[in-house]
Length: 410
Image (cartoon, rainbow, N blue to C red; front, side, top):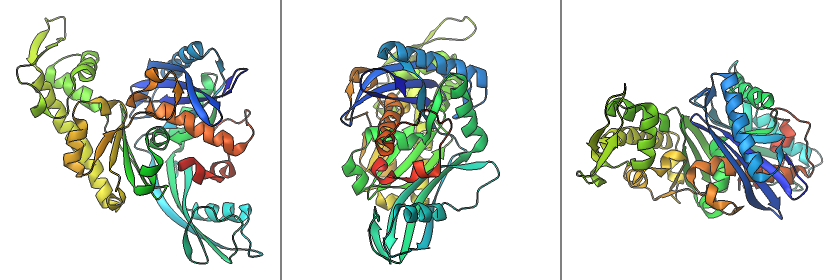
């Protein structure tokens, strides 16, 4: 949240491995106008997990200060994204008997609580409980059973869990940066809010959000989340491969990737040359751009193939009738959609933030998908609550996360 005397403001904070992005959205009549954006290189995280509290806090403060300056407001609380290989997703079922035959909100909450009762590791906690479908007396395909008549209520839910340590270190960093945490949100779920269409979620779509430290998968079908998965390989691995293969500093490798990165080396003119900085004060060299493509392509192919393997093994690939959407910074690689189409044998598009106003020229990039998605997710949460709970730190109660979740993920 941000304090301002105009529309209601919601703030998303994407704490990534390579960058931190704070996005301020002004909500007017269920329309989001982005009025402030702040970014800063991320120092203190590895593969989405905090490894240095102080460095992360300082990076958060700088990104937030930049967003405050652009938006002309004071930011006090945020919806924060989380990713990392510690995150897992599992589907679960619950069932209860209905008292008095009419289904009330307390029965819906109870059956979801029942479905949530899965064994958790010692260092695991629930981040999301996302309803997929309800059944009343065996009749399925029900999204909201409130007020229906029956004696047996079943729920199918998707449960996202994460490391207690990782989640609470993210919250601690935000608190030490002077921010309350409205909610902790799995990053691909947030990104989906920004880049997917309702038609894609209904027909079946796979979203792959390729960040700096991880590549995150979310599969939607019939307007529900069906599968989530986090792969511990991301854009930083590509940068590291370039740094080693071209014998150039990491910062130079990142810049080369951003300016000339291509996922299909055969599409690069072999006579196209690039200047590659050397290490140790040595002179820079001119190399064929195709050499860089030949370093990047195998890693991108590996990354996408592992995600395709997960889609097949999880039994969700047949649901992906609307194709694949790539987003995140690595989605900016030239011809990555062509390579993905070959690997997945699906239609592929690049996901840009959609249906937003304001400074769209600043956020109209896959790199900002998570930050913008967090704002949209937050707007829907605020609409569901009806009132603002400014005093809450941390993740919040189960009832807050369950009530109206179908509206949030559709």
